[in-house]
Length: 103
Image (cartoon, rainbow, N blue to C red; front, side, top):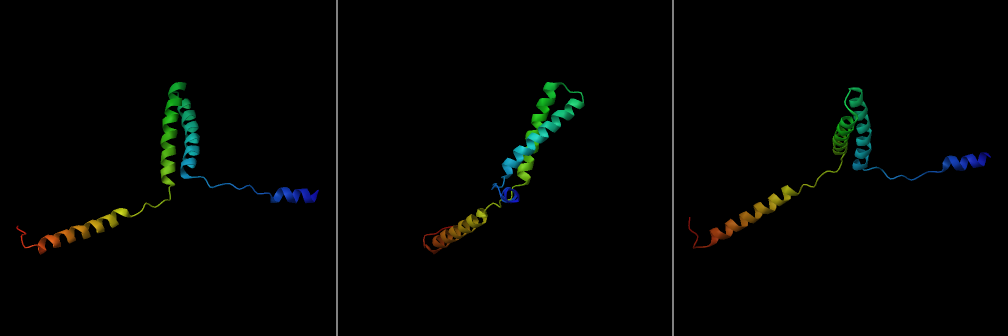
């Protein structure tokens, strides 16, 4: 019997980490319920409390998901600017080297 308990105790379930979008949806549903109940307690009609709860839940879910995004965007504009600057410099130096260049 003790052997059975050890096998059950050591069994692990592999779970993948939730993305910020999944966490945002979960948080949004919780906030929808919270807002819906609070608007109901404040005396709003059922339809309005559901509607305002949905709006509040969606907004809270988006904010939560945005707040927990950890991806760092690539710094491509700086490298594009460097290439563009080098290109413009090269073109200007080519034009200055031509004898028929007029200002």
